[in-house]
Amino acid sequence: MKIAAVLLLVVAAFVLISVVWRVLSKRWSLPCPMILAWSLENPLAQKLNRTALTLDRIGLSPGQKVLEFGPGPGRLLIPAAQRVLPRGEAVGVDLQPGMVERLKRNAARKGVANLTALQGDATAPIVEEGAFDLVLLSCALGEIPNRAGVIRQAFRALRPGGRLSVSEMFGDPHYQSKSTVERLAREAGFEPEEVQGGRFMFTANFRKPGAPA
Image (cartoon, rainbow, N blue to C red; front, side, top):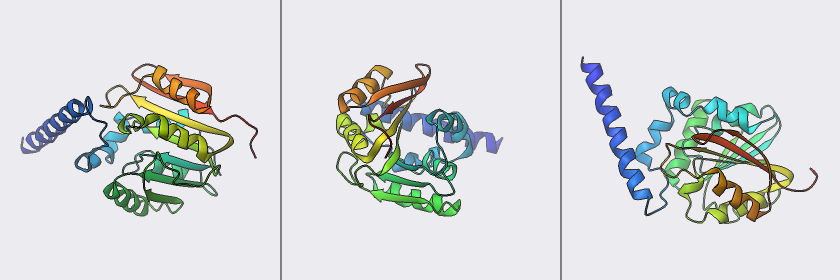
């Protein structure tokens, strides 16, 4: 009974924080607070967020160089880094120093040595131009006030023929619709490839024009 009571309290606290976060997000674009980082790291979160399915939809391949804007504690980026082994690399750019440190710790704990975590503004040119095969945004686009700016930086970071992959879940406080994601991508110069999933959980893939270098 005590265990059940503790679990109930944890769930209730999480729901309360999520509701408050959603209400505040109606007025401001707020990044995932550090207090909720734990909710993205446990195995239950991996199942509820369908992490493996999202990675399959993105279409990762060994040897790719992958960049994620807003990776948080690494729910998606750490397993993505494992999928691009043995010669692939992964880079995560997060605005919050605390999330960057958490990402580094989680990667080290899981023995993922091909991942680099950077603190910085995703709407600024923080990474080398044309250096990546794939850029990821997973439930992070709506957390960034300058949404068009981060999509433009994704375009800049990709090699010709590189792919932008944007994943959204309806339950996220900053959920962005398919039409919004496609509009922003087209405005930045991307060509639509495919959208997998329905309204409540989808991954939209786009291609930067040009032949791979």
